[in-house]
Length: 227
Ligand code: SAM
Image (cartoon, rainbow, N blue to C red):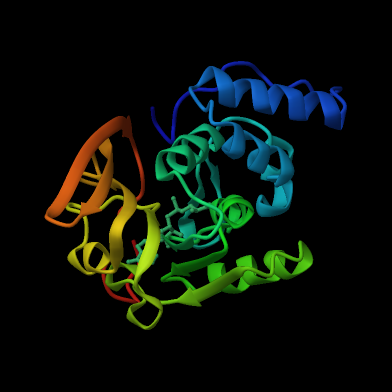
């Protein structure tokens, strides 16, 4: 599975909004997104507002799309696979590293009690905050910073989702997981196919599951440098 996987079928420009939504959900299921709560959340949160300019017509395609600051909104099926792998529970406090467009955080906000999301680009943070306000998603807090250090003030977290590729699961994030907590993170070199890893924190250490191949932009440590 890749952020850059080819589309399965060209979108029909004549399709009604309801038909487009059905096609969207069908493409999620056909790529392995089967968890009912995840599908309900993705049905509820329209991807349209998170995609700007002339890419808006492709909002319902199962493809990553460019956003501000040279970043991407992830492929919807990858968002679905990551969300279901995270097994979010209704009382959970979730940290997302890599706000990007805000779409993934909006999906998580349907499943969790509270979502903290952090991006290193202030412009992306401001744009996402505006969309969250417009959509009245009041359980999301969006912050600018280097998310590889987590948010120590708000730790520990029940769930952590990293939406950029790390060479290893970042130590501060592992430390900020609760016992029994789950982190999902793409691991590998940024110029190669990476593995989506699920890390579960136990009393005695960490359990690791390798889930699926993915391709993400790199997790950059530090602020103020261009990718
Ligand atoms: N989750 C996003 C969405 O729903 O649109 C897509 C995330 S995009 C693939 C990866 C994001 O990670 C980019 O917005 C990038 O700025 C951010 N990023 C990279 N390194 C980071 C870091 N150390 N801390 C916070 N954000 C980081």
